[in-house]
Structure formats: C-alpha cells, structure tokens
Amino acid sequence: MDDKHKLVIIVGSVREGRFGPMVGSWVADQARTHGAFDVDIVDLARVEIPLALPAVPPKFAGADYPRPAGMAELTSALDGADAFIVVTPEYNHSYPASLKAAIDWHFTQWTAKPVAFVSYGGAAGGRHAVLHLENVLTELHAVTIRDGLAFPNYFTTWQEGRPLDPEASGYAKTLLDQLAWWAGALRSARETAPYPA
Ligand SMILES: Cc1cc2nc3c(=O)[nH]c(=O)nc-3n(C[C@H](O)[C@H](O)[C@H](O)COP(=O)(O)O)c2cc1C
Image (cartoon, rainbow, N blue to C red; front, side):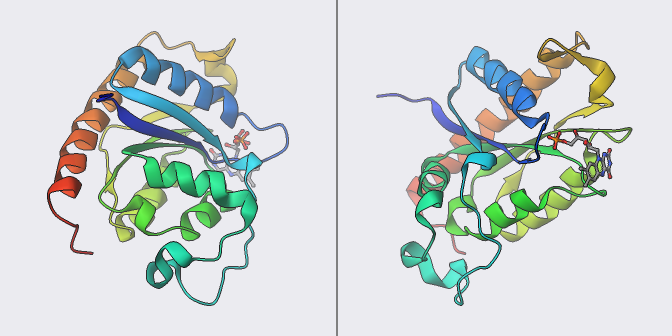
C-alpha cells in the first residue's frame, strides 16, 4: 500500500505572464525530494472557474453541486487530497480572485485537511495574501500550517527557476515536515470518526 500523503499544490494566479507556475514547480520539486508525498500540481489557469455560483451553497448541496465540466479535475483533485499547498501572489494586499472563486466552489473538500502556504510579491512577500487565506480556510474547517514560505521581491531574489536564498530548501523542509505530520494525523482522525462539521 502507498502510504504517502496525497499533496495537491494549487497555483493560484491566472494572470497573463504570471510568475506563479515557477514557484509551483520549485515547491513541487521540494515536496518530491522530501519523500512523504505523492505530488499533484493544479494550475487554476487551466480550470473553468465561473464567478457566478449556483443558487444553493456548496455546503448544503454535497456531491450534487452543479459544477461546470471544466472544473471536474480540480474537484476530484481536492476530493482526493490529504494535504494542500497554496501558492499565491499578493494582489492589493490580498490573494487573487481566481483563488477565492476556486475555494468558494467547494466546501467538504477542505474539511479537516491541512493547508500550507507559499507566497511571493513585493516587500511583504505575499504575507497579506496568506493572512486572508488563513482566515477563509479556517471557515472551511481546514487546518492551516504555521510555517509558511514567503518570497519578498521575487523579481530580484529568484534566478533560473529557484530562489537565490540558500536557506530556502531548509525552510521548505520545515513546512513539509509540519504538513506531513498534520496530513497523517488528520487522515487517521477522518478515518476514525466523521468530522463534526
Ligand atoms: C492587481 C495587482 C495587484 C498587486 N498588488 C500587490 C500588493 O498589494 N502587494 C505586492 O507585494 N505586490 C502586488 N502586486 C505585484 C505582484 O506581487 C506581482 O505582479 C506578482 O508577479 C503577481 O503574481 P503572478 O505573476 O503570479 O500573477 C500586484 C499585482 C497585481 C497584478
């Protein structure tokens, strides 16, 4: 039996010329090297994410929620995940609308699962975005991981697809260690008893 945790890395920006996929790809390499995870990258630019939601909130509709066909792969990846890493830039001191829309189209997929954050941006390194994401994902009964990775001024601190900071892989390992611990603990808990949401 494969006892690795299923990790879904969500690339949150969909902007033309975006930097997000480079960060997502580096994080995926770190996660594969770490060894505790089966790694899947979900790029929101490839997902159909309408802003108009159906009448009934996803919380009450369950598996019958009428999602568009172009969202099926995303939903299935979120359903099967034991853990998430959200890769986010900072837009106007928050995170991109694409990410909020993807979150709002789902509900049970986040429940009692751990989420870690890797952010990038200007001086604050995307930390404002992460603060908002922590708030939103807590509402969805996810467990947010304390140690995130933030890359300030990524335009001068990354080269050839990776951060120049030699400590970055070490910080990533700390994040992944914590994420793996929570993924195991929460998977056992979900298997033992239904979460009282
Ligand atoms: C609409 C918009 C708002 C932005 N607001 C901020 C901001 O509040 N803080 C910041 O550090 N960077 C901000 N930026 C700069 C982004 O961090 C930078 O463009 C980054 O590359 C965006 O990520 P992406 O390339 O993956 O889309 C903003 C960029 C955009 C497009």
